[in-house]
Length: 467
Ligand code: BGC
Image 1 (cartoon, rainbow, N blue to C red):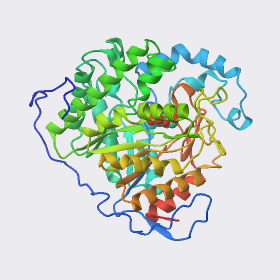
Image 2 (image 1 turned 180 degrees about the horizontal axis):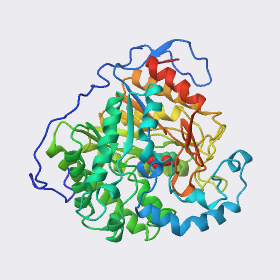
Image 3 (image 1 turned 90 degrees about the horizontal axis):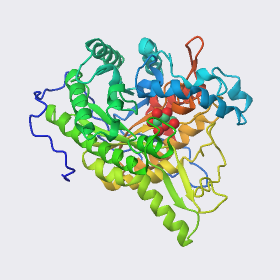
Image 4 (image 1 turned 60 degrees about the vertical axis):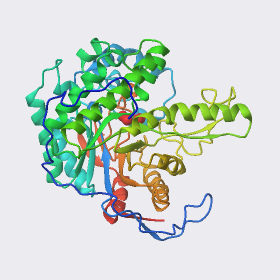
């Protein structure tokens, strides 16, 4: 193992290794049953042949604590209160389509930028899991809110631990395999006040929390230490549009290094407790391609690809049992003043409410590239903001066809989690982007299953898709 300066001595965390309390299916034992994949041909016709997914494939959707639970208290809630006014004012200078403005809260309302009660999932998780089960999901990804479990440094909150036990239990009762994320961008206030991810001790502090989590929830098999560790410092220290929203570029690198160390420390500590745990992390991988063969475009493409996809995957995937892929983006690299941010020149034939290009083939390209790590892969996020639900069905089907093609060509994909089960609090954008298979009425907390969710359910229940 590469020495990154943080080695915890054996027994450092003191706990005994324990076995699982639950029963686990072994997903992905078999490869896709269609050997000669008829192909999703670029611009060509698709042959109507059923494409099966591997036996035991895990199907579900994902959420994260801060985005759905409601009533959290962490570094994000503090940031929201200081920034809601400014974000509302900024939104007023933009043009918004009516279909966005008609929903509550709209981007022009301050409530949009305060997570507050969110989806009240903390109290309604059973109802939400009933919906997921009715849609055939056999797995579910969610995150444990660190600030609830450890509200003060070193003090564990038994009431909150019990809450998450109930969450896990209700997933098991419904036959859904839990995938638990330990850090989805939010930090306890005390941790942020100690310098957050710039603090020298951060890897140790985080690994201690992760170790506590596996001790408290020993029947969870699948753990995701971190969600997109690359995004947090880029937004927090470089773009400064998310907490801690300060620092310089050097802070971004320091935080990145600490996050990588924290993943490794957590991995080792959790494995020491139980070596049979299946531990990974999730990272967003962009499908980059150069616009043409001009040297400056090729160079920029290589640089961007290296930055966004490689440093972390290589370092952290080494200390992981699987890779969690989040796929959202395609980027055609063309250095030009007319390009978006000077480098991205996409065709944007179809875009989501967020303006993100819909480019399903990208998931295939990225999966093929990830094969080199020789680790099982779970798609831990893939989805779009689509308040009218006009693109989602096609989006899901096309991505799954390309994913199937990758599987049939030998990429070891073992599960797919759509982002997201519910509409939710989309960070600095607030509530207006609608990513849910299930629509939330934020006034009444009523849940309405979108048509696309039923279409996804058909694929899930058949464990197959028409190619
Ligand atoms: C994040 C989610 C977020 C989604 C859509 C992912 O990168 O993990 O928290 O809601 O993107 O922006």
